[in-house]
Image 1 (cartoon, rainbow, N blue to C red):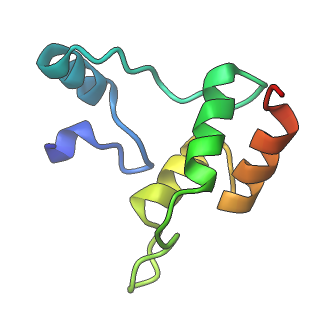
Image 2 (spheres, rainbow, N blue to C red; image 1 turned 90 degrees about the vertical axis):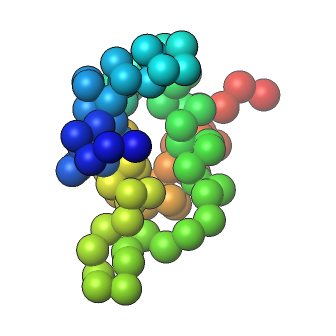
Image 3 (cartoon, rainbow, N blue to C red; image 1 turned 180 degrees about the vertical axis):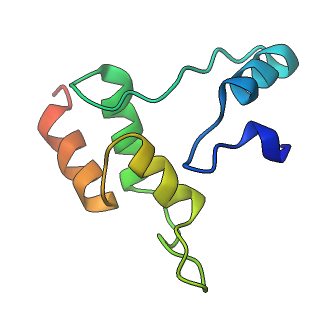
Length: 89
């Protein structure tokens, strides 16, 4: 993936979403930052169980940490708690 398709603050840029739609037919949407949207619940559940560090060896946030921030979660734990509270049983 080219650098211009990655947002410095996490996730994909609009150009990146357009690129994946053209190349793979993916219908990617921008992050949902608040509320109890089913996409946000799904994202929280997926990323809460994701392995890997939140910071790299130089102390910078990883892409995982940036993605969580983009969706308005401060940590894996906050995403996990959100998913537990709002999942459908």
